[in-house]
Image (cartoon, rainbow, N blue to C red; front, side, top):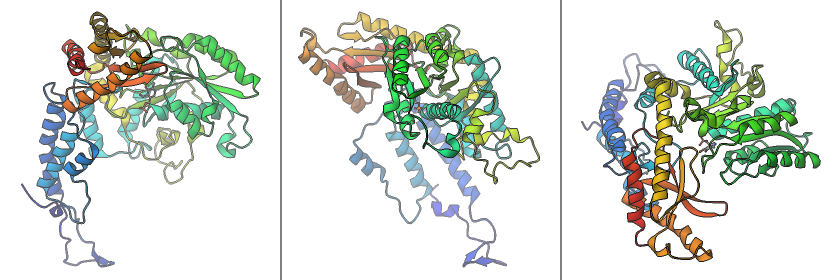
Length: 512
Ligand SMILES: Cc1ncc(COP(=O)(O)O)c(C=O)c1O
């Protein structure tokens, strides 16, 4: 079919025409039939290119093009007139072709990967219905679902009496919520009076914490200098004694400590802070304990691995992203709070009278949107609920166990293989390692060795992306030169993919 997309707009009915400003208002002007036909034509293409081929191990992970070439290939210019359906279908094809296939079994680049088909269907449903989750009247189903999912997640955190929470657009935003609510609890006047008159507030997080903690401090007017970095040990875990020292330091300076952010699953090493000991320090100094479990929270689903988060039930708040390890699809992030006094609502509500009318004909306690800092809000809980319904808790647990077992397998293979060196034993699904190419293998490990090793991971990364064979992240970290960080998540990934990774790195770096 090659109908011009302009056809999607019907000519208005001109009989008995009502005109306003010269515009005929009779009858609809959108041709739904033509629109539906377009959707029907686009669906098989999406299924073939963005689902089937994008997850096929024999296809490329990415089709690398430098930005200028890609701009040309995509013809990004926006014009006065619309294009035909055929041209628009070609646009679909091109967008998919040049996008990175994050559901591909050899995409190990980020803390999310893989494709869950149930979550995908849930996303299709919410995209089609386009709900905003603020009031029961416009999102009855999705609000009830969000409540159930939050409650269930709180059970896994171990808050027997429940708590409160809300889905946020990202773990970074959940962390920001934690800082804001903790500060509000500490000085409730801030909501009306603002920052003036406040003492210097100080918060604490380990050196390994996610950068969103500093961003939250900057965004909320606390100041990045008032995030005191607590040293971590050589496995990347916060040292509780160092936390105690930093709290004492802040107090001596006359500042007011109010929050500690512990990390359960750090971004680079996947390390888990010792929550029990950190909770003891918080209790002693009356500090809000927030656990950023954006990445590691999913270990709570596993009876085998949930010990990694031992003590999390003592947290005042938790950030947990099912879009990472559990593959619920971007974005799916819960902010959970132990508080049951309505603190979240009190901290954020603005009681817009056009949205949160108190005299509605139903129980307005279901209108939970005022707990959020947003107005319109996506139904992110639904895709997680739908997937959870489909594969059950045991299915989610199986995914976590398998991902961690695959990470373990890869670490053991790295230890056996000449030219590879593990930085540290993985505690979670992050496997951090160096590839030492043949030319460096007999070099003494002095400054020149480290300087040259620093250049290896970026060079191999360039080659793997240009070939499209796989994607793995790399970074320098503190005093360590560039190393690979392999993240294992998707149940589509197999032992064979782990073996492939090592062989491919060797092949790409053999001449270095
Ligand atoms: C430990 C940790 N916290 C927070 C975040 C931020 O999550 P998001 O990307 O959903 O904002 C990340 C992201 O990787 C993370 O690793």
